[in-house]
Length: 264
Image (tube, rainbow, N blue to C red; front, side, top):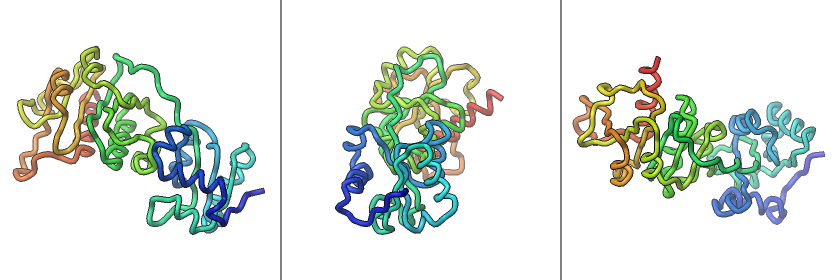
């Protein structure tokens, strides 16, 4: 039988609210909060049934969400229906989708491989940008991602929503030493830069593996990481005389998919 929760004093609700609001709590508990049917389904496709499924009162009346709750009960997940007001307190969206899940944080990957296509992100602090870039990486077949220590949390609710489940398909290395990795990497390493850089369309993108490096908007790739990369690359913008640079998410998409195109 489904548990129904209508009180903010419910111990389980208090725990879930801490998970929703606190990165420290998520890291300590090694649990994450997934919001929306798509994100829950993405997790299920890769990792199986989450630990817990939560539905709003309105959401539980929808056939799709009712099916998720029934499947969760059959497979041993904790399932609960929350009063709409309580569900809204857990959600960070203006219009909650009616379904959330609590899942174990994916295990930390082993040391980064030095012989696979890699994406390095230096100081990307906006969760939306980070999630978008991770989604692009997964779509372009770049399965290994290294994040500098000051990047946004890849498994925060905002980054997860922006990534739409891409995180579950990637090997994500947090707080990585990007310069040290580049020094040991076996293939060409390409860092985006605005000065002293070659055009994206003039360099040979066929060699494998390749490491692409992108930095935060405004500051770009920082000097020690830029110095460790073997080549600087710029995206030509002949029609944008008043624009200094592209959004980093757009820049990453252009470069990664140009690599894919050139490789055929």
